[in-house]
Length: 293
Image 1 (cartoon, one colour):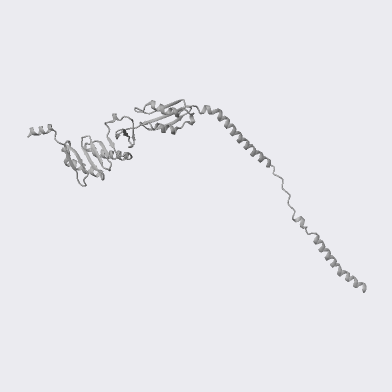
Image 2 (cartoon, helix red, strand yellow):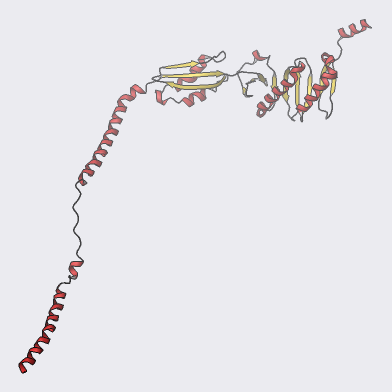
């Protein structure tokens, strides 16, 4: 019986020993802390890494070669492309512009090579010539400059020494003796275009009556004065000038037209009417009138 009891106690301890063995085995299976923090190995460089470097280097060298080659080529071709100016052609109808004056103005400006010629400077220089209204300048490769000039068109005299063009701008040709047939306009220098515009309007209003303006002045105090080819003077005052001329047109057609040759002056400075100054009868006219009587 004693033997049987011991065998039972041994059987009870056996699983305890076995349990201890299992816990020890479980500890051995845990990974160590040092293995969990280890750095991963660097991957190998890709196969085309060095190919990319060589590609960038190739394009850089190619760019440098193109720049250097272009510079060398341009230095060799520049004397052929950028030639000195050999000919200047002047075009346009120029009855008043002297070719000699044009040549003198152009000579110092075309001594440079083709691409260094200052076209704007040439145009500005030529437009300083009094009779030149507009200048157009262009290059014609390989060695030519073409200039087209348009002359001023005078339509009136301005003061004693100048003429007015179609834009109401004055220019001084030097001699206005050949233009005595043009109407004479006068006023402050800053009022050139204003006087020209007024002349055009008044001429349009008086032309149907058979009048042509030979003189129009804007005087110091802002009053207007004109005279016609028929020898009639008109005092227009400062204000409502066009309205006053319309009033004159109406009265002239109704009452004054038969006496036109005897009218010396018309004063339109009145607010609602006008005054007429008559010519004095000449001795011949008085004698003819006495014979009729």
